[in-house]
Image (cartoon, rainbow, N blue to C red; front, top):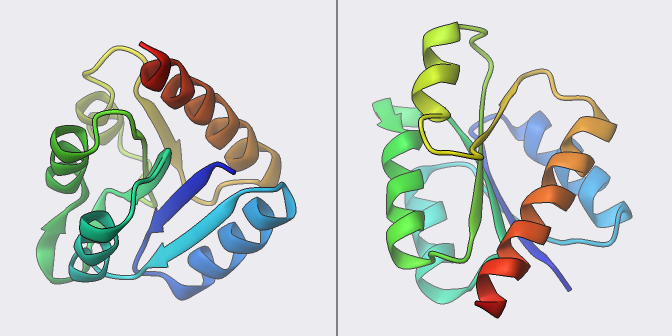
Length: 127
């Protein structure tokens, strides 16, 4: 089963994504803070991580993305933000194939993004 980590400080976002993705057949873990995310990442392997760009306490989702890339290179990271600012999208998508979503994210959009990311993750694991 594909394992997904949702990292977002908004409880409503975590709740809705959890429901959407578990209904679609994914195993979902939730983190509301960078500290919680790091605990999950140190003890579990994930196929996909959905990371909010701005986390509580001024934490950077981009820094967390870099850590995930370093410690779990097979895990595909989807960045998202509630700020529809083009610079954030450009910053987050500097890497080829980087997925960037702007909140609010519709059900079909998050499911499709996770599906595509999971396929990329699976391909990386087979290499």
